[in-house]
Image (tube, rainbow, N blue to C red; front, top):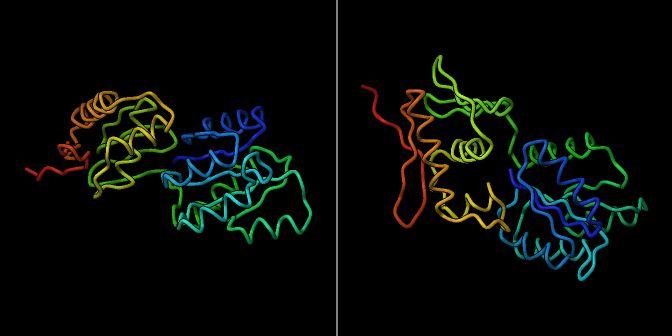
Amino acid sequence: MQILIVEDDKKLALALKQILIEADYQVDAVHDGQSGLDYALSGIYDVIILDAMLPKMDGFTVAKELRRAQISTPILLLTARDAIRDKIAGLDSGADDYMTKPFSPAELLAHLRALLRRQGQVVFETLTFEDVTLNLESHDLICGENSIHLGFKEFSLARIFLSNPTQVITKEQLIAKVWGVDSSAMDNNVEAYVSFLRKKLRFLGSRVGVESLRKTGYRLTVKEAE
């Protein structure tokens, strides 16, 4: 899942990013409100962690602009202040949840899980489609009695495909979610890792494959049982 951090304290932003990466989230971080708004308007993020006090545009305004633009991504607002009026202002601006600095990594992750549950994106330990299962804890891909461990990018691709098994996923979406919007990754990077994933599926003997759609993207397919 893709998280956007909008935090002007670069040391804190880096610490938050590391916590989330270790929890297997994909993370982008920016350091002012205008950049945060520009990134968030892409609509690719699952949660936005938004500091209240930011240069160029404060977090309250960013949240209001996102809601005005019909971006419904859950927003976790961060502030060093704990006054009731700030909490009210944050929630009234469109934020979904509120945390006061300082906080523990465990508290942050718990708030993120709660936001995802509210959106109906319950974080399961496994994802299954047809005869293949992806273990989200161990990063193992399983088919029947066979299993194979996936590298991080292969796992990230598999999670996206298995979370959206009937949808066409574009290369641009895969680059944004797996490599990040600021990445220099190109189409050939996506093609290489999709090829690796296909080989793993064939190795397992799965009926599931990844179909390339010319000028469109990829989607999962299922071979008929013999």
